[in-house]
Image (cartoon, rainbow, N blue to C red; front, side):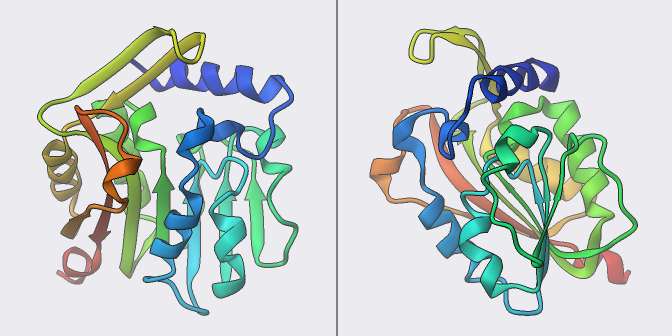
Length: 217
């Protein structure tokens, strides 16, 4: 699996008159209220956030009034048309693999993104965005991860009626990838109640990782 496979999936979705919840893949998987509530435990009115693969803004639309500014990176303008128009939100329609900026952020958020990159690709993404965090910055990830092993979905989905690609890496592997790059205090949090986890071999977790100790050395 490569990210280009997943990008093709979302490109087809973008071309097919999407609605605000199209990016959630299935109607039952919109947990953005819980995601927003989780993020509000960390951010404050002075926080500057870089949100990667923002989709239709289901999360950032709920938190932008509580922070200083959000830069939303999303490849497809068909999705970002649903993001609130505000001086507190800057939208950049670009692939997160290509986006570059000299600006540093307090938080970088990646919700439902990591599974669409293979192990080599996500290592490059984490390494790239590590450099865009301030000295005391945090990377906050929410994703499904494998419980006992990596779980790879590649090919036609009977449920979705389309080719679908995801790599749900084992949660311990994801933590090790982050630590190898230089993130510290990598905390794994069981973000949702049990009923939100549909499958027996994967589980939703949030990961909160710091840069502070590494960058002060």
